[in-house]
Length: 129
Figure 1 (spheres, rainbow, N blue to C red):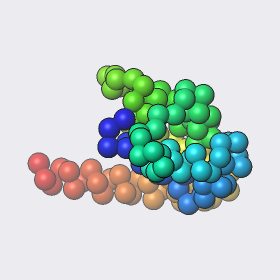
Figure 2 (tube, one colour):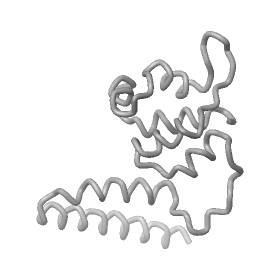
Figure 3 (cartoon, rainbow, N blue to C red):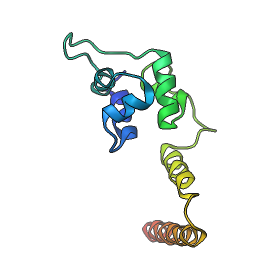
Figure 4 (cartoon, rainbow, N blue to C red):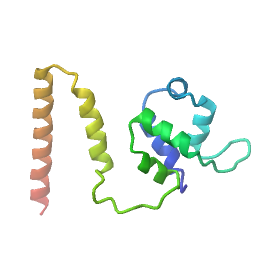
């Protein structure tokens, strides 16, 4: 693990949920989750590397690709990700999956807002060229 990429990713994925909330869902102690997010054991000052089973559980809880968590934890090299969506795309997919529960009118509004933002960004890129 370099520069605690794994711990930072876990903090990001946890969002505004508490360690105790994640602990209740995952059956991983909140103390161990805290150690994972720090990247080291505060008592021993040694770097911590979670087991594959823990990473699998976290992948399921956070709906995050297992291979990417494995990579962030230092288990795999950074493969060429030609067929893997970017982290931004994956985030949008997770948000949009949640938005599916919205009423049709709100989904239409959301789609319109996204279209406006994307068009605005594309125009800005064209101006910079």
